[in-house]
Image (cartoon, rainbow, N blue to C red; front, side, top):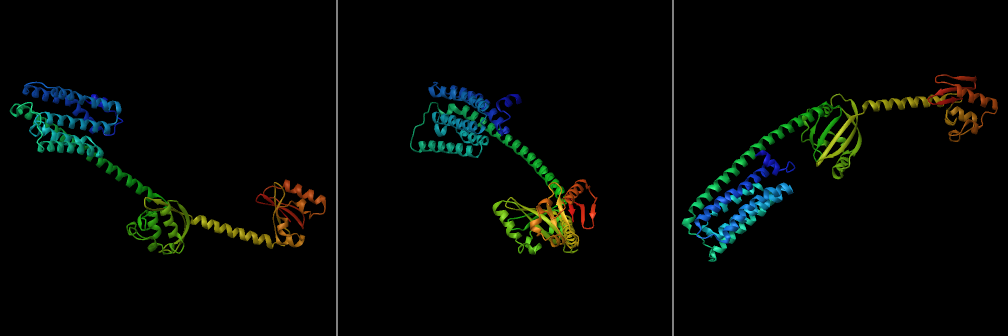
Length: 414
């Protein structure tokens, strides 16, 4: 049976449970219909055209499982199938007794139960057709319309009993299927909840293991969640962050313009980077952070990297550069930095400018030949040779007034 259902219901159809039950119901439909037709035929004095139409309509149930196999469009086929069921039932009611028809219990229960096969839009369509058909029959009855009475009611009792029995079986089948579906859905839901819980725990471990600070805010910049690094930086527990505003914990955020930048990120969705200086409330130590702010849902997420060591290095580097600048410029000897690749002047000290009478901005960028401050051509050739032969960490002296040395990728000349 499973192989048959799998043939009619391809794996590409998402609603497997409903589609399989739909196929079972419509494959069994002709069998039920033929039994009803046999009971009806025994009660009728003559077999009219309406009877044979009813027989043919029972065969039509088989069209829908094959239509599902071919089209693979369960929503469309299921709507067509339920509308067909309603059409068959209304046909029997009209032609065999009207409101006294033995098909009336089936008309009430079976289409209602068949709505299980449908999605929201399909239910609206089929329920609307069912209600319209019912109202039409009621209207015909109260308008005095004579329904075709092809058999006495007493002769249709067996058909009425069969109709009630089929209706009960069909509704029970639908109930069992719904119970199975809800049970399976409940199991799937519990699995999804457990999977989500494990995912949340993994995300929490990741956030708390990170050395960067993580913080999530709502659209009013109130804290929603933070990681352990952020909590340690502020010296309070993670739970104490929840619901508190950014301004409450970072009062200078507004004066520094960060609040407006963050609100702009929420409005536009464009991320931004900011450098932030903080002071630990307990130790008083300064910390420098590079914060990246980005939109998260309707709120804001901030990831902040500690760049304190980098800032200290930059500060130390600036001090070293200042000390070198001072030593270079205050040296009484003529000093210059010359690029090795093209022998162009990169830097000269104050003594060089003062003694040679060449302005600093005129000297920088020119070669020693272009500056022409060495009168003796032999000195120029000697300097070029010494510059070419000089290696890292070595120096060559011509006399007390002339020196060639190494500084980074340049040669110092003075």
